[in-house]
Length: 247
Image (cartoon, rainbow, N blue to C red):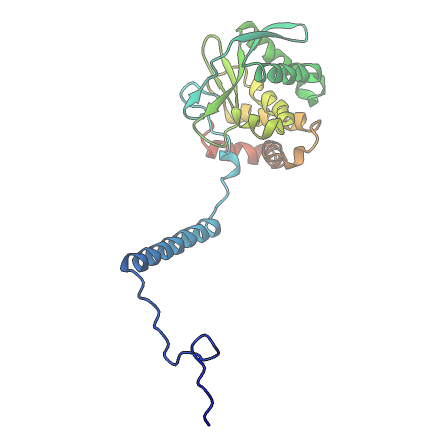
């Protein structure tokens, strides 16, 4: 007597395999296009990383142009009231900003004025330039620059405007401490329409002296650039600045 043949579902496997269904043509084409796009993006990213060249040291602050001490391209000024601020016994300066930015600028500016004697041997000369700006009613404010990477500039005019990049406001104010040396650098220019190579070198020396009191300044580009330029020596630094376009 033969054993009964089990029915499907009771232990017997089908002897014929069904072929995979054919994928729609649009799906195949779309997948191939996506893979090609990812490949191209990957290649571009690798090329960008491997071919990246650091901006030359002396070109990281642009020379004067179009009435700016450092050319920063398009400038978007704040739409906010101005507030008078005293620099020690000196009056006449104003800061412009909202409820958060105006107090921040006031704190940094007054902090610089309190420790101006500590800005190396450049303190008295920096104080004199601040007096000139105060007599002109200079306005200090944050601004948005069209050229990324630029830190400060002065717009000449009546009154002159000392501007700091609003990039310092990012990250919840974590870059607050680095405002002081950058403001010292820009105030050194005293509202001048044209910054010479020699004056820019002096501004870098002022900046470096101000950096000495800032915790973590060794990780800040402005301070490290200033140190490299000053450490190069006056002759080499002046050659580099003039090659970058400073008169």
